Image 1 (cartoon, rainbow, N blue to C red):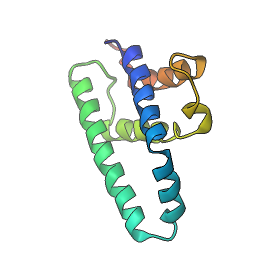
Image 2: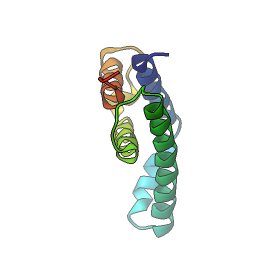
Image 3: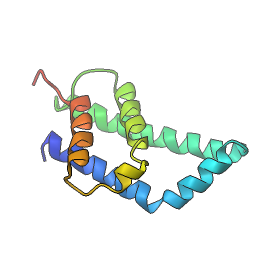
Image 4: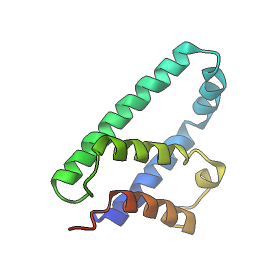
Amino acid sequence: VGLETFAAQWVAGCVRFFRSNSVLFALSQAKALSSAAVREVYADSEKRAIDHCERFVRLGQSARLFRAGEARDIARAMMILSEGYNNPAVLQMAPGDALHRELGGVIARLLENTDA
């Protein structure tokens, strides 16, 4: 699987996640301001997700598939970008449409090793 294909699949997977959890996210975001417990769960979940992405980035870097750079920061960028996929326009996009291609291209460019 090439980088463009991976990136398109990453976007599609994130969109599926947000689509299937949209009610949970709406409720928890509404409670986040008033609930330390909800904020703690969010922070812990985000840290674990970034840890997984960081490992993924490090593996890609060691195989020279991904660009050099601070793996944690690249992983954090991936997570921050994916949080934007919980957007009505993204949640309604069709697989392979222009928006999907653009979002996949952003992830591909974030990871792309132009020295390889």
